[in-house]
Length: 285
Image 1 (cartoon, rainbow, N blue to C red):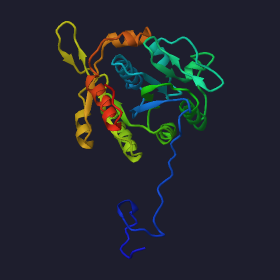
Image 2 (image 1 turned 180 degrees about the horizontal axis):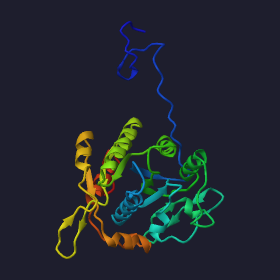
Image 3 (image 1 turned 90 degrees about the vertical axis):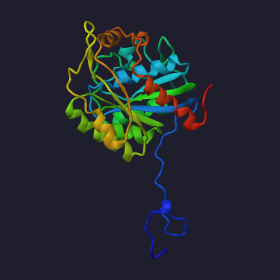
Image 4 (image 1 turned 30 degrees about the vertical axis):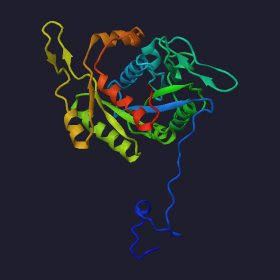
């Protein structure tokens, strides 16, 4: 070892006995019969800001572009994805593994509500069991020919979110927020967690951003002024979309008809996600 050793082996070309080893890769391999090209995590610093809604809308829009998409619902204690898509059936399996449920438009979905006896049953499990279940959704489910998988992350920066980040190798995450001032603080925590886990942040999406009055066309910020521009500037992150308060969204979710909703709010986010094809070098025509 040189007397001037900084112990930063990543920037050193010397070969010595004291060279520090790279940290072990904790990422789990998916099922042997799975093929998943891209994995995008949808994260929020707290619950109730529309993370599952954004996950669903992005999967639907990418599916309409001709990609085969899937959703891994990692929000075990608050699973809402099956309800949003109007799924009534349960997940099945065979000798090889668990099979996800497919929506009307062809999106593959796996959620805890698809294996519970009753979708209203609470999940009264401790953290390690919840984290283990999320890992099984990755390793034991057969995800066939998936171009883009979206992971609906558990809210916050706790144990289960950490397990997902450590277990599943992601191409990037999108962070969902809302206009309230309190949320800007918890979003900062989510951003810092992603940075600590070395996961690229593709951008921010603000939900409940404004309400557009159908009578006069004016936009009203019913949840207060947005803080997303300041957050984006502080961390050098792009704002990908601002989703309004729209009764059509609630109606589509309540009816389980999210796939029929026509909107263009997320076009910039879809464009950013599509760029992952170029990053990985396996673009489609």
